[in-house]
Amino acid sequence: MINEKAYAKLNLTLSITGKLPDGYHSVETVMQTVSLCDDVFVRESAGISVECGALSGERNLAFKAARAFFASTGIKGGAEIVINKRIPVCGGFGGGSADAAAVLRALDSLYGSPLSAEELCRLAAALGADVPFLVRGGTALCTGKGERTERIECRASFYYCLCAPDEGASTAQMFAESDKYNFFAPNSGEMIRALREGDPYKAAYSLHNDFTDICGSFCPGTVLCRAALMSCGAIGVSLTGSGSGCFGIFADRSGAIDAAKALQGEHFAAFAESVVR
Image (cartoon, rainbow, N blue to C red):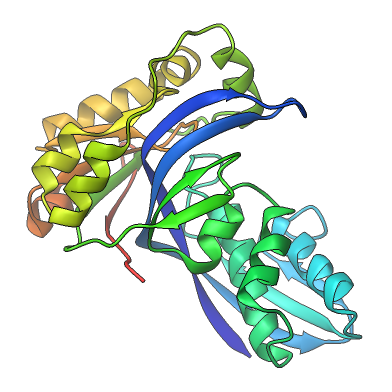
């Protein structure tokens, strides 16, 4: 059996750059994996099964990842997959995509690494826009639908408090609403420089997400979470993905930990730090 950590992701910047011929939107986003994670256990089996509480079964993206792996490689085998969830569902933290990426890594290892890195990423891209980034994780500038990744070298880890309201946000609905808005041209350069310099204050100043106002109008809890993070001492706060989850950057580890403790019970809240690969 293999135990893979499925790390959550944050969108430190997220700009909608256009609409593609297939109806999907193009984006520019700086993504970062953080230490909040699901545990994904995978072992060889005759068939494919996924145990994940209310998210068990064939509808889980992890099941689809396993099925795609065996279809792509032609390997006659299966996988028994057990997922211990910690990442909130429908919060923009990429939990389902992270689980799928973890399954791809685990199966590639279990079955003798039949796929090259490029083939694994192509397989991941067919599952979802965030999955290719999450196969490797770390820090990257992602474009296209989010599947094209360019690695960013970071000088230091940053400390975060993640926070989410009870209500989730529909990605499809958020993108549909975005067509009613006019957005400024994307500029991830300042964030990339902040990450390379390891400066949390510059990073906090450079946070940006085009979905912030859209999500806030549909999920009032998001606005409350952002305000709560600021009241706990965050030096910068932003939405992740299309919401409804938020995060705050803190100047030091203890500040982020204290914020998570203060907010637990009122909202989902968790301390996390950068996972750099």
